[in-house]
Length: 365
Image (cartoon, rainbow, N blue to C red; front, side):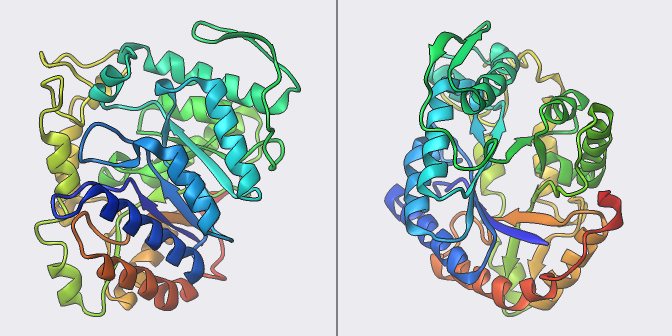
C-alpha cells in the first residue's frame, strides 16, 4: 500500500495562521523522514476552512525542505487560475523537487472563492476541462497554440518543461457523478476518492467505474492505484483516540455550514438566494452528507482511528475493498501539534510495516 499525509491547513481559532502553517510544514517534513510516500496539499481561500491560498509558495517550501516524499496537490482549483501559468508553476515545482510532483486538480465548489477572484462559478466545468487540455499541451508540445473559449494563445514557448515524462501524474477529485469519472478516464487522469464518496460508502465503486471507463477508452490501468482521502488518527490507547477529537472533528463541517461573504454557506456552490450553480445540481444534499461524515457509525469504510493495532486492522478492511492508496491528515483542526506528530510516528513505525509488502487486491484489475 501507499500512504500519504494530507492537509489544507485549517485555521482553527486556537492557532494563528503562522502557527498553523509552520506546524503543517514541520509535520510534512517529519512524514518525509518517517518514510511516508506522499504529502498532499489542498488549495482554499477566504475562510477558516484552509490557509493554503498561496499554495504555490507553500509547495515550493515543501519541495525545498523534503528529500524523498512525493508532493501532491489535492487539489488545485483549476477554474480559478490561468492554465498557462499553472503549467509553468507545476513544471517548476517538478524541476526543483527532482520529479516528485503529483498534480491533483478539481473544479472547485465554494462559490465565495469564485466570486472573490471574479470568476463565474457557472463556467467552472467548462473552464476546468479546457484548462486540463491547455496544460497537457503546454507540457508535451514544444510551443503552445490553443484556441478555446477561455484560452487563446499562439506559438507560446512555455518553460520549463516537467522533469517527469510525458508529465507529472494527474489526479482528479471526483464525486459519484458519472460525468466527472468519465472525463477523468478520457484524459487518463487517476481519480481521487474520499469525502462524499467515502461518506456514502461508494469509494470502491467509484474506482471500479473509473477502471471500466479506462477500459472503454482503451487505456491501461492495472498498474495504477487511485488514492482515497480518509481521516487518520493513531494514539497509544483507544481512550485517547476517542477522547482527543471531541469538539474538534466537526470543525470543517462547522465552517462549511457557516455563511460566507455572499451570504450563502461557505461549503456550497450556491448564491444567497439558495440557487445551486450550473453543473452542481447533485450537490443539493452535500451538507447532510458532511454531517453524516462526522457520525462514525455512518461513514462508509471504517474510520482509521485508534491504537496502531486497531488502525492496522481497519486498513486491512480498506484494502480488502480494493483500496491500496490512502492519504489522511493524522489529526484534527485544533489538535496540539505534538499529538499530530505522535500520530504520524505511530502510524509510520507500527502500522505501515504491516503493509509494505501487501499485494494489490484482485479487484484493482
